[in-house]
Image 1 (tube, rainbow, N blue to C red):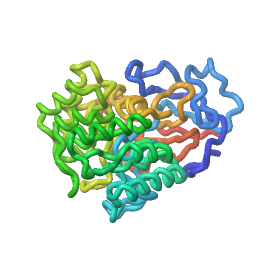
Image 2: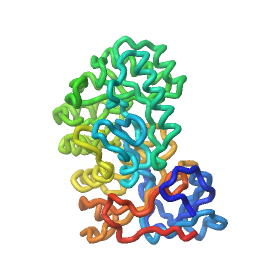
Image 3: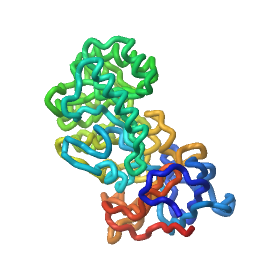
Image 4: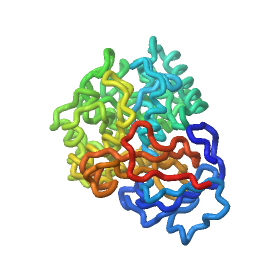
Length: 397
């Protein structure tokens, strides 16, 4: 039997059959003509029709009961501290609650809410390395938290970025949350980070907390970070004219977050579609934050961008899976052999006016989650946070 809710490693061969809808996470082909997935040692090994696959000798077999299967959802923008606790809201268990919202991977945009967060160069490097080590060794509920994202400060030199990368740090915290706010200074540090294989994000819009700054289009364009962080503001957005400029003149990821301006987010999505560059769109929650913790935030973003953003639901799921995986260089987010066996099984919520899962999301309803799997291990059964689903998968052995 799978270790529901546990944190053990891959358990061996996993078979999921009777899948009613297989969402790939790939914008080029968001729905696969398949009804079964096989994983082994935490990795996908085969996807296709059950009649064509080797389903024998599985350690765990799951009957999907006609539910949809999606890659595990990825939150591209969180602010963790240590463990499953956030001082921002004095809340325990927030990551586990996100797991119950289908999130299997989180990307830190900086551990900025740590009380007394060090801002000297030695201290900020030590904090980043500690956070990276901590979440690498501890995965709340099995969720993969990519943490250790230093908030860059004035006075940092190239050697600091080399040291961080050598220690295993692969991210930069939101540029603009520290003392580096000018475009030319940020550009230099982003280039150093990129040289050493570190993925960068820049704050966009008005200040979100004391100490952060207003970052406008000119700074974002000059800095050239890998991700235009919360292009719809966190919380206060740039003008729609500036957002249009960023989408048109920058080739980097367009990140739309839950804790931002919804009108601005929908505008950014529309411009990305007009540019035929939906592959740039990724989503996050930007939480924990002053507005709280949103366990269903990624599902809500998918429903928002589909229902009000005139986007097929199967494409909206890609914004939270395959798009983020590719732009963040992750080994999950797509249903294809070799990828991490991270899955969400879900169905239309009971009494939704939608005819099926995709139609219900297109109409703005959240799906009901029946199971979440990380690295081939069942972490939860029916979600305690989503509405109940019409159908729920079952572990048959």
